[in-house]
Image (tube, rainbow, N blue to C red; front, side):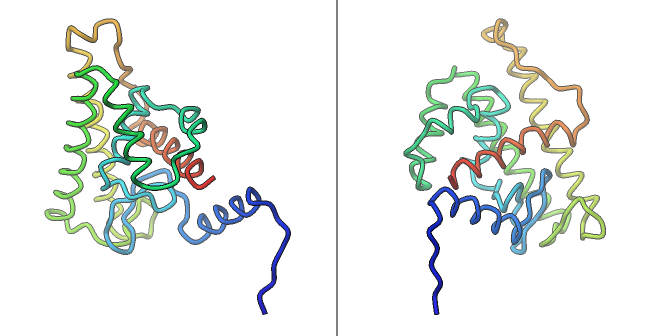
Length: 191
């Protein structure tokens, strides 16, 4: 027999997110899922271009958690894609180049690791998982891509008054800050 409750929709969403976290786990660092998809957070597929753009737009200050919180029409993947692309079209040409170039370079790096380093399913930076060193190196390489593209942006004369900060933090912490936003964005989209 099916049991019903009188919980609110908000309570249901909170319980659903808790269940997803229990099943998927919530990781701040890159890992591969059971299908060898590069993932972060709660099963967040960073091989999808729009989600890579979200990470980069957050890092560059184009997208903030409060911007997502005010969007009530982001219920489907096409709606999210349209919103992300509309934000990007309002950015400067050099910012669009930074985000699009870095996004493609990240995808290429993930593909390279899968092809050349035998990146396997269920790889993580947490021992005793498989491919610990390989996945850590992938994370380091992605951080280098981000930092190199920020340097190119900052060296463009057009951006002299709008410099992006190149974090001096450790590689893991630097990317962790970006991906913490992704986890928050996932929570917002589930709410």
